[in-house]
Length: 294
Image (cartoon, rainbow, N blue to C red):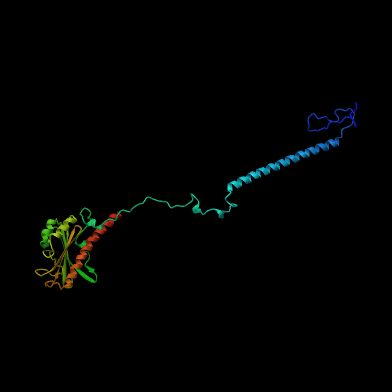
C-alpha cells in the first residue's frame, strides 16, 4: 500500500503529552533516537515554563501594587491635593476640635457681716467693755486738737449719773450701765457719757424721750479737772448707735456760761461726740471681723 512520497508520516512526539507515540516505539526500522535533539527540545520547553512563571509573578506584583496605590489614593481623598498640610482648614474650624473653657456652676460669696449688728444686741455684743476700753490712753487727738483725758466713772445705776429728764429716760429704756469720762483742752471741759441697753430699740427710745435742753449727763470732775457746769449754762448733745446712747456736756472750767459765740466749746463737744461714735462703731467692726475669720 502506497502512502505517497516519503512513506507514512510519523506522529509528532511531545514529552509533555501523555501517551504520545515516541519515534522509537514502533516502525521497526532499528534507528537510534537523536538524544541531543531530544535534550535540546526538553530544555527549550523548561525555559518557556520558567518564563511563564516569572511573567505571571510580575503581573501579580503589578496587580497588588495597583490595588495598594488605589487604596492610598482613596484614603487621601479626591479633594486633597497631594496631602499638603497647608490645604487643611484651621484647627478652630475642624468640627469637634474647638477648644472651650470649662464651665462651673456659679457661686456667690456670703454677704459681708454688718458691724452694726454686733453692737445692736447684747446677744452678739459680747466683747469686754469699760470706760478705759472705750476711751483708752491718756489723751486723744481729733484733727489738730489734742484733748487730755481726765477722770472716768462707771455705774449700773444709770439715773444717778444724769440729771433733768435724762434719768427717767434711761430708767424707762432699761439702761444697764452708764460710763463717763472727761476730757479737757485749754479752759474747756467735756464729759462724755455712754449708756448701755440690751437692744438698739431701747437705746433709740431713751434718746427720743429726752432732749439735750432738758436732760443731760452729770459733769465729771476731779483728777485735776475743776468742777464745771455747776449752775452755769453748758452745751449738751444726745445721740445713739446700736444699743448705745451717748451724751456730751461741755462747759468752761472757769464757771462762765457757754454762748453761741463760743465756737471752741462747740467744736470740743462735737469732737468728743464723734469720738464716742467712732469707738462704738469700731467695736462692732472688730467683732464682725473676728466672726468672719473664725
